Length: 234
Image 1 (cartoon, rainbow, N blue to C red):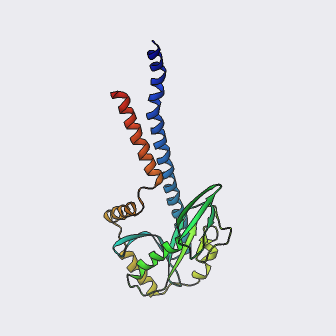
Image 2 (image 1 turned 180 degrees about the vertical axis):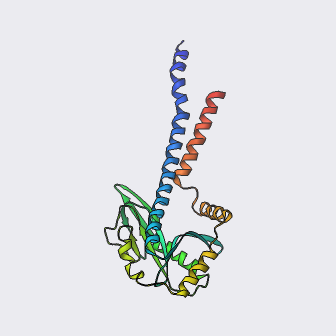
Image 3 (image 1 turned 90 degrees about the horizontal axis):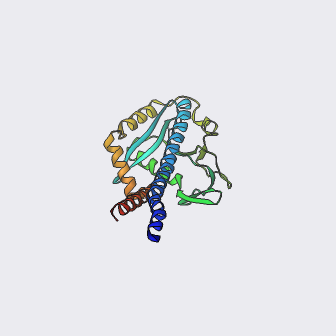
């Protein structure tokens, strides 16, 4: 009788485990996809400003780089040359210098590291240089959210709020025919087909994995399935 009473009370608790783990998996995935969607929103905001200010803009270019691929958020045609823009949709404090390999994002007690976006954008410039366009190239990193730089923004870094003002020297006049031809060649060289996009994603997963939150979500889902099977079978 005692064992039966214990079973009656314990069984619902045991069955709560798969549902708790499933809920955790959904929460992890929701957070990961939310961050990705926020990043895409930041890119759209920067793209809209660039399109309003510049004669022509390209978005989401995939180009060969070495033995792999690289993806460029935006390239804008300006009077001075082609402006290569990397967008970061971050908030909180951003800590890092131009020469540091990694920067840090500080939100309260939480701190996470990320690749120095100036170095990341330098690889984008390298990919475009490999096309032999023979025109001036410039890089700019734009932070779109409420990111603050307590030690000052490094050179080559802008914000969405100040982007129009920062680009004023680039917008006085019309781009030369030579720059327009180079911009057209860049547009033709970009890999825009579905296969290139899939290849780039596979490359990113091979280099960086699925990401901590997506991985945690899959682990929680596996635990949910295994615990549910164990309860059914045993």
